[in-house]
Length: 219
Image (cartoon, rainbow, N blue to C red; front, side, top):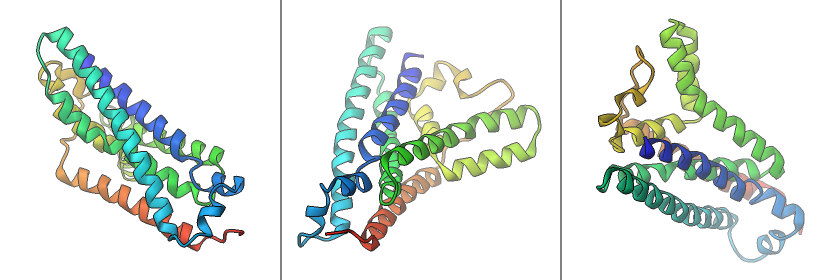
């Protein structure tokens, strides 16, 4: 339980931290004039976006590793042994903040930080609603709700990462009920899930680079 809820908290705070760092990374800095000086220099615009993404990724990766180390320490104190599944789940969990960094950078090209943060929170809710809608739709036999759950999973694939983390953390071997309520089976994560998440992150970053390259910037 310590491992499971620790990883849930880690996912939440990594998403919040990614949003806080990246929501005003471009548009807001242009409004303040801090990016205007950089844009006028002989440097490609995509390099600015990619550089910001890489910088955020490094900070968030270090943050994630610290959280995972704390969870591992808690598991060791509780169980008296190292729980290596925490590290496997934690490495997959690195995709979580990267997902939100790409999304926030993409939105930040044209929108003020407050709108970017709000939209990011909406997407966070969409991602988390996938599981709730799937569970309710299965128990109540509501096909339309199951369809909405699938759509939510494509719009914001955080559930795909979460399922991989649950399996790799090996908590189901200890507490099987964490897979879902009685009568509902958690979909088995696939390699395709991870590939979709990676594509989502990459496409978001590439779109952010392309849109920023086309944006008019006052010198």
